[in-house]
Image (cartoon, rainbow, N blue to C red):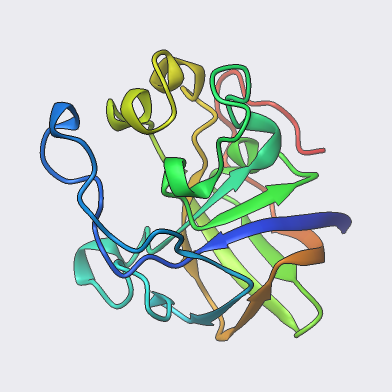
Length: 175
């Protein structure tokens, strides 16, 4: 178990990156970051665009490591640009694809199955800046399924790998 920080949470009711990147993001609320997010097992984050969507059951929540944000491209980059849900500092979630993990923000542990990489798309070059898609390759976060109901909060948390990730070529270790 390691101490981590939940830096940001994003719960977005709208798909903002639809269509062609050259047309720009769709309008939506100015800031979809929240301090508290309710998690429902197998469904995702209450109020999020992927909540209870059958096509996204194995990818309803996306975690990303703050250390992997392309701050050299945009020093202010955060979840509003990357469109991930949970930004963690202190663990390399990209190295944990295939693992089951627990995140406890002080409200009780919530387990997640880290299913597959969140591949960066051409939208990253629009929302973050030119070169962001390439900079986020293999560092764009992990698409997850929540296994428990619970609450996530911005701030200090405990992170535990409950079952190891599937071996993959070039994997980096968790910190």
